[in-house]
Length: 205
Length: 205
DNA sequence: AAAATAAATGAACACTGTTTAAAATCTAAG
DNA sequence: CTTAGATTTTAAACAGTGTTCATTTATTTT
Image 1 (cartoon, rainbow over the protein chains, first blue to last red):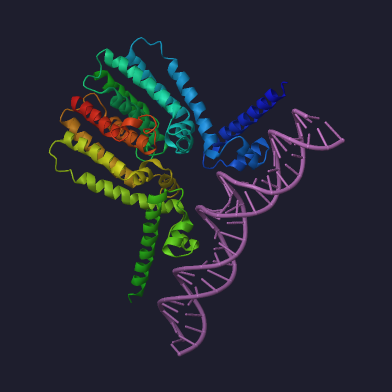
Image 2 (tube, each protein chain N blue to C red; image 1 turned 90 degrees about the vertical axis):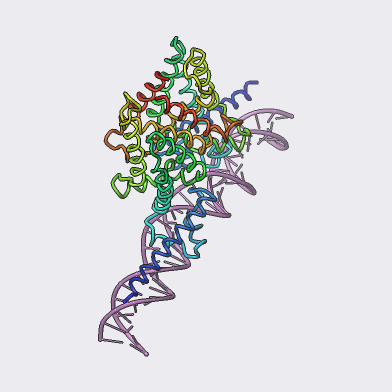
């Protein structure tokens, strides 16, 4: 009896439809201005039906932000063949920054917005697998750098956090428009220049 | 005829009342969950009356965030007597981080939330005086450091941005709860440790 | 064909920011 | 002291929000 399987498949399909609709709307208008009714209109279902597939609005955007981490992670894994860990570390920084600037709304969801973390807090008792995996990847690369003698006198976890903070700081100031009003004239190059300065520091360290 | 003056004074008083009410509510519940009606209830006026004193909700929170910058700036100016610019630079970093962790909601409003910048974009044609003053203060201190021979091979504006980004990154990851789920065990010390690592880097640079 | 199960709906609830016509209050001139 | 004018304040309305739930519709099993 393949009926149960087909039903399961159909349910999964509609779930996917909701996510696709939500994503296209939120990339156009942002999370706040994407309403359940907007999503329902787009997939031609009633607003209430969405609650059979997602607990609440936060869960929808939590699901969406997972896709972002998959994308980011696959880009990161693509530079795993670089022989020197310090080169890998810098490449990860570049990838992180480029991902953020190319997908500002998705980055916002992943690292700035409260919606996905609100959902995490309410369900999985403070476990954020997506973020943890990304951070672990940075930590293991940094460990390799230190094994080669780089960054002496630094503690691995704190330095990992510092590096993450540096790239996050640059792109989040940019995304939340604190650059365009303070560095108006070189708004589009400042992140690249800042990153270059950062690489110079890492090389000398 | 002091009547006009008294009226002016009364108007200013009510404006201040609105701001005080808004501030106490937003520190308790956050910007999004502080409604115009909540503010109106607290000052015992009708919701509509608030619109005689502020154009919209964003303007209220723009006004509030200005107070935050005054606070931050006054703390910064207090270390102007330190003789060495590098010491001043590091003290500024400490002050910035402590301000953020002691006033997370205010920091959120100043450097993360979109509300104040939305208001800036809609009125003053992209001029953010509060943020600009703070950034200029960092830049002038960094210039003095470089005049003493520090940070050779770096460009002043880009490095200023990088330093700002580093401290902003650490506190904003903390405030938006990306630390507590990734660095649960040392959540309350990681920013301090990260900052120490950063100071070590600045010293060696 | 009837009973049981699952899915979808539309209306309702309690909110939100904002606008506006009307009412209330206060000031200034006659 | 009254009346005309200017402010200030209000209540009601508009169009929207997330979410819940009894009812209807559709599908599957007996």
